[in-house]
Image 1: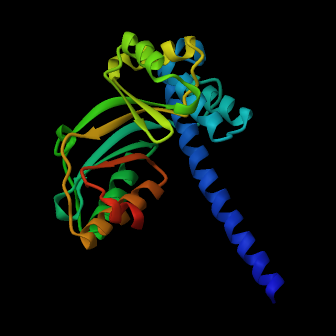
Image 2: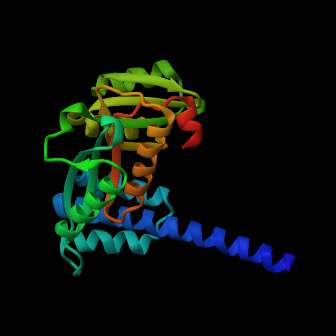
Length: 247
């Protein structure tokens, strides 16, 4: 029985890992397709595609999968026609929630998101209802142990970065959206590898909630991030130590 129990545990863990990998690869595939559709299939000519390829490789997505996703974007092979859509709403306690999606069926996506918000005690709002509470920024993360802070600062500042902060063993570089490509190119030219690079939405104001309400917001975010069409979720919830620990 103990051997069977151990095998069952291993099997469940493997299934969970495979399930996560499948979702991550699906999201990477959508990113690649959209990037190739907008900027063509040449990595060196499309910073967005280069970023999507980098993310896919970081997630160990097979080369064949990456190439197929790019070809779907350029029209070389048939595939789903994905559309970028954003949705805005409120979770319990008045917490603003901004959701980025890639979908091939907007009617399905909006209906499913409305259901998730409603089930969590929130509501899906109109376009523009919470967008003003978030700033669009570019973020690069660079391993601190491998780089000199002053030298890194000079490189990214000259390329247009607006901030560099150290967070444990990582340098976090914040850049305006319009300077994202320039900073990315500067880092590549300097031979500096990034552990993460992305366009994000940073809340301009944060709201702290009692622990029970904060956990409801965290649960909603979890459910949204699990949904197949969702690429990213941002909120105005202030995450204190206890909330982070529970998360």
